[in-house]
Figure 1 (cartoon, one colour):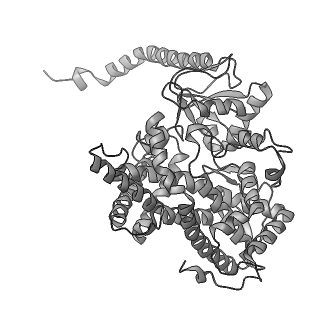
Figure 2 (cartoon, rainbow, N blue to C red):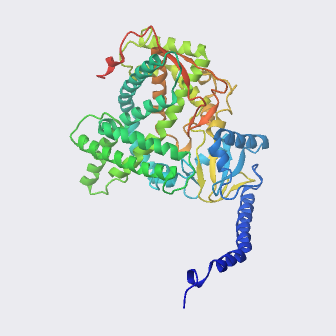
Figure 3 (cartoon, helix red, strand yellow):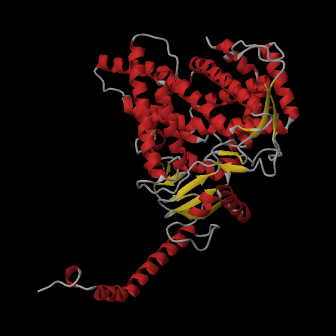
Length: 521
């Protein structure tokens, strides 16, 4: 007997079956959409936010297409309601935006298994993996932070200062050469600052252990990672998120190799020249002490584990510093009185009308108190990472009238806190760090987070920004190329000027030396 179609069915029979099932499929889809909508409304409760959400995607497309407008809208809802929080829905996840400083502190202070989990990115675990510093709790987290502490002692920071300024000066010379070749056309600083910071991070963190070819691959992978941070999290071949996840694996593998090389070098008794050296010097001492006493080998001391944590440092330092350097240039240009005071202080500390070619020491850096106030005001006025996402591991009573549901992603806003609790907060005013209440400043200055997961490298980050401001203002004359909306905020994923920082640059006439004069420091 001859078969008719697949499994004995002809085309007409299949069409009839599909047509008959159609109403049931539509009902099933409608039921799923209805249940998702009801779940969203139940979780939302009294919070302001959209009443209806697009199935599964929610507000993902508006957030990706115009993140500035999306987050401004969330902040406006939280402010107008007087509740300090608002709600929305992104790619199947309920989210809570926190504008209130007090409620943000409540989130930061309750990072623990049965409350909030710091995630760094809404889909961070899929990008970074579960074994990551930001996902640790309690004693494991405290122990790792204790073992990281030697990386940021005054001795270590002094070593980094020498490295940082060498890289900064080299890149400033490249910028001036590019500006000279551009025939009076403005140049965009964003990618130039990104390259400067990437080289700084690689050199400070991994030192001599990254070869030239490894650095090139590192730069390509880090770019893939950055693109994936802003993409829809589809972990499928051909999608940016998948490319980012694979890039992270390669980056961690590369850094693990640096850890192994550093261990070998530190075993010879060599002096540390970079962050991983300071880390391995102390780690090897703990391993030897454990072996001598018969104790268990220290946790988090394997090459791959430390390589993963090195990537955490790079992620934390790289794009945040790029953002701050860009805003420093734009804000100094917009406030010539501040720029004049910075130049005067730097000249007074260094004993010259401009940078004389001698390395800036850590002690001289500490003397630049006004320049540091400018750096802190840049970070307050434009905090690079505007939000610090957490996930609710369990339902948590955020207030006496609202409980964050389990699984919700919570976004405490460092940006919104920066404009609360400060006098004339909308004004760029570095002197506030000398005159205003210090406790109030600490309460609302959340650019480096708060609580047990507060950024361990904030002194390093401030030093880097102060060094850049001191050298840039000493070596470069600059003028913003202003266009309508040029200083509007864009997310990339940290915040930057919308025009990528278009500037005209020229060498300052008081500069008397070549940047190469510090190559031996």
